Image 1 (cartoon, helix red, strand yellow):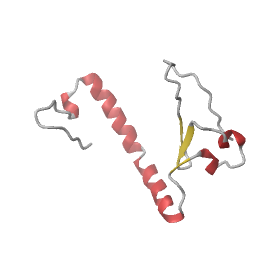
Image 2 (cartoon, rainbow, N blue to C red; image 1 turned 45 degrees about the horizontal axis):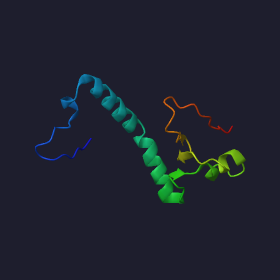
Image 3 (tube, rainbow, N blue to C red; image 1 turned 135 degrees about the horizontal axis):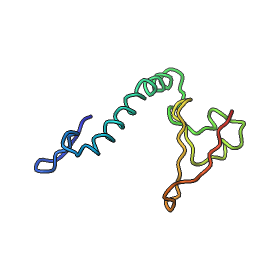
Image 4 (cartoon, helix red, strand yellow; image 1 turned 90 degrees about the vertical axis):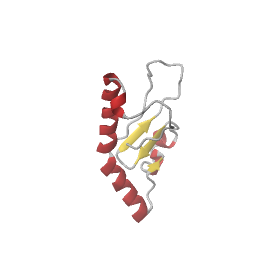
Length: 101
């Protein structure tokens, strides 16, 4: 991972952080690279047939009212779904999300 920082500031390479932080950083990178092929496939489809990479779920389910009305869901390609919880007052978010068949 490329890093930019200013001279005379704390170094930001992974090995300079405590072990407890390194575990999370390594897991984050592992997840990032595990999705790389999927992202490249989505970008290839977008460049060949015009499908948007990040899109509202009504693009894939235009006849489902639950998907058309959703304002906290988006899709990355056809297989990766993100549901956001915008309630900042909840410590442990408890929200419902619709999953079509």
